[in-house]
Length: 155
Image (spheres, rainbow, N blue to C red):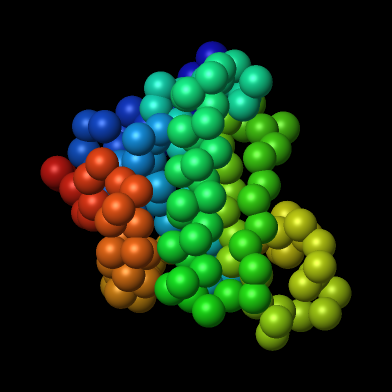
């Protein structure tokens, strides 16, 4: 079954994306389509698998290490209070990790809840003209963990 995750990974392989932060050993680090919190990212595995349990041994360890490295970079760059890691796959049944900076100034009613408690339709979309400095800073912070850094748009 081709999911949104499959299509996104295919597009990243073919043409890159302005949201691309880095090609990691396990997949692709990108800024999320909706910036529910500033710096919200996704880690997409390549190749795509249905869930974390389909990865074994070193592939599983690498995905989790890359996820943590992305979180470390976000923590360093954004000044967030903490990083949340959410792997759900309920609506889009393909492995992908939401790596989410959480801030002390978030509204009280959602501050301690999963990121999906926000009304995503009201959140700002990823905008290369606004988000490029942040994308570049995260990429630089990931330099030691990534295979390839940066924007690879080949339109």
